[in-house]
Length: 99
Image 1 (cartoon, helix red, strand yellow):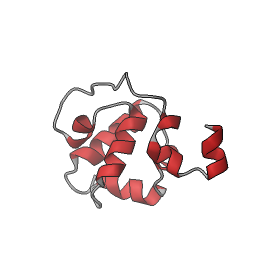
Image 2 (image 1 turned 120 degrees about the vertical axis):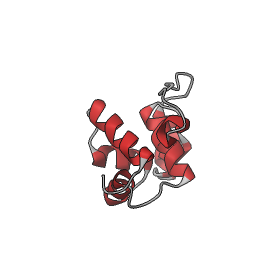
Image 3 (image 1 turned 45 degrees about the vertical axis):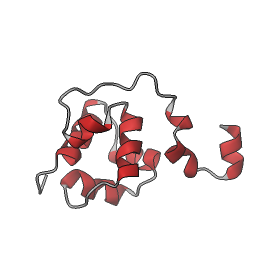
């Protein structure tokens, strides 16, 4: 990490812990891999919608990603990622109807 970025470090740590490739996470939340790379390195702040989408995909709280909580607090009551509005925006209307 080039700069102090609790969110970037936590995203990176969760990806490694769960064996998720950077490109896989970026694609799942609608980001270009280079954007996620910059967020992880602390070179670009994450936007609210990006934090929410990443937390949703990784099944942790946004507070955990932001460094406001030391507990991951898995979001057990959330629907599967296919029902995440950020995931759906990356689909065309026909794909959305199928989901």
